[in-house]
Length: 219
Image (spheres, helix red, strand yellow):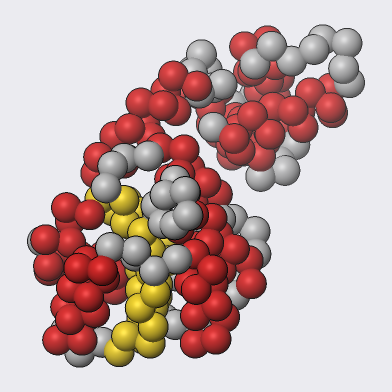
């Protein structure tokens, strides 16, 4: 694979260069800041980029923001992000780029995983192939956060099924046919969904349907 590396820690950066080179991959660029990452991705169009979340000047989220910008300029460019800690908001921002024109492979791993060389190389291959790879600790914290913030938490499994089919643009009749239930049962589920999502009763049925679908997409 053709790889770009972005990490301001020289030892880790050079270690990644050596690891990838010895594994038969070509390192096109190894840089230490976000601007250089974007420039390298635009210039080289790598098969995958390995990016540290925290880079100069503020060492907060420059790497992540640079990765998002690189994916905007080079749609579907695969990115594997490395972080010292589980930073859920950063993971959410990164995963948001998998929709729309972004697409492409995405990964978010803790730096400890780099020490497990085979695991790290496997993750890199999967991201380059267009897959999504998340560190188990990241997944766990995302699930905790989403359970806490999930607007759909009060919906029954059947109501979630109905909402998912609504999101596909299906009418109540089409939903009833897909679930092998009556139209009346679907209408009851839809009313319950509107109530549990606290959608305004003074809005039109169509508008509430749109709002319900948006809640589903955000969950």
